[in-house]
Image 1 (cartoon, helix red, strand yellow):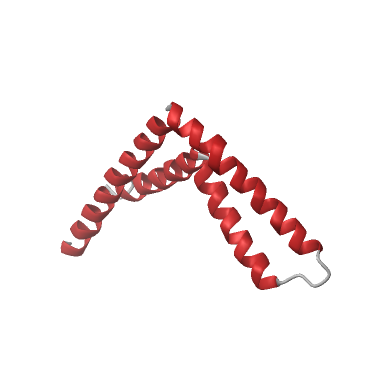
Image 2: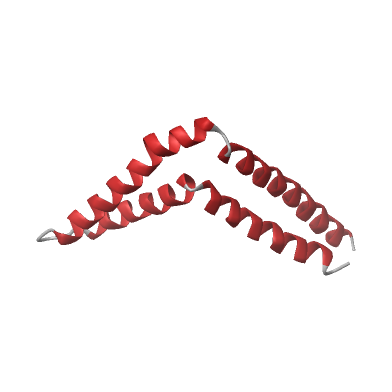
Length: 105
């Protein structure tokens, strides 16, 4: 029983943290500053990485290690440059936490 309480407490803390993250992402997306950063930095970064991956893949002797590294960077850039997608990710996490927390009770 004591272990169950600890698990539930941890899940509740994680739930509260995830709620704060979702709320923050919602607020940030509405700001002019975020739109500026997205347009000036992130959108160009994603496009640049996509071009670099295509160029390397088309080269005579593609470097698989470089392609893997660029793919990882692209995945990161896509995830964090689109706050709506990131928000959706955390909403799914929150839904799963709520299922774990409240279906047991």
